[in-house]
Image: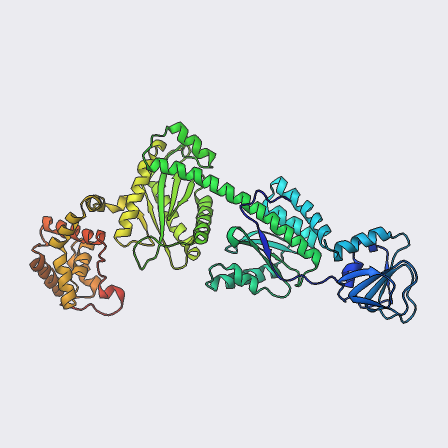
Length: 551
């Protein structure tokens, strides 16, 4: 089986192979019709070599070939004799008596394959031929596991580098439970890859083999319900299975990278504002399994650490696993979409209705919002320690304008990051006046800083000096549309205290919240504070059960 299509050598890492035993010899094809004397002889002894009969001694664990009378006495060191003659009573070692029509040529050929310099070659050749069929037919890992089961006579499973099952066959309920528990335990270890603890902790009746790819990267594991150590033939089969899986893995990697490149090129062209005709866009998307004829909603996602700003350092394997999970959710709830991963961002185009269906903008956007929540929930366990923030655009019915939809989602994502919405869904519609302020922040950040200093900064300094909650009170008051009673109830504080704080706010920043213009300035000041990366404090009453403090 040629490996020239592999990106690098794929190697098998697993338990040691045991020496063949007399029982393994007796099961060779050439010994069909033979019998062993004495009846019930122990056939568990190791066999390491063979030699012609004769002589007074033999090497350790050698089996003798005798075409005439049996050597008497049996040479020291010999573990068995292969002959056509029956053993005399009391003969000290087992004798495999060949069938009358057995060919010595076939016997020697089979024994050489088991014990000679090229031992295991026959099993490897048979396995290579068997695995070539599913590889040629394009049956993937499912076809390979079926062929491997037929060769080993045991259940087989193939798992990827995150221990997701790629294919399995003949695995019963008890074995499935055993496998699920082992996967959960390995993932909980916190190792760089869960493959190492998964293989290291294999029970005695299960053999787990790591498959290493380029740069000794652990790409998958083969599990089979066979006790270790394996026979030479079993090891040969698994070695060929590893190589076949490596070829299939390499094919899928190339296919995935090619499709990702095509998806990425299309989305990048849209984001760059390049002119793409409607017909060309629809045709290219359909080649990638997406239908954008009815327009789409753009969705952008970012994995980040909720405790610090900036991009999250995401392991390549975690990102790949996350994208697989995201695609599975989208295929289930919103098929025909376009999904890509670009460095540190998830890029998605959720297609609108088919060309002849009625498009309900409000319904489409609500579905996109619901899907976003499902996606965050479904992928949470995939990225431990990180959160997924999603931003969605308005529905854009014209395919040629999807670049604008991606810009809307990108803007919403940036705003969501600045205002502390990590792990949440941010829509373009809800960003409101943040869009205008963000443009100012992007072009002239010093102006936004100056506006913050004129409005909210005096309150922040006062809170820090006297341990008060003026900023939190202002944010809550505006959140409840300047309803004094609702604000007091939310903060578990008396209305007179809220009035006092509002008066203190007016004194410190010179803005009367009772005046429309000043109230708008204070609201914009809070938004500027968030865009500048300064968190608006949460009132104590909202964090615990105690009452908020008063100034």
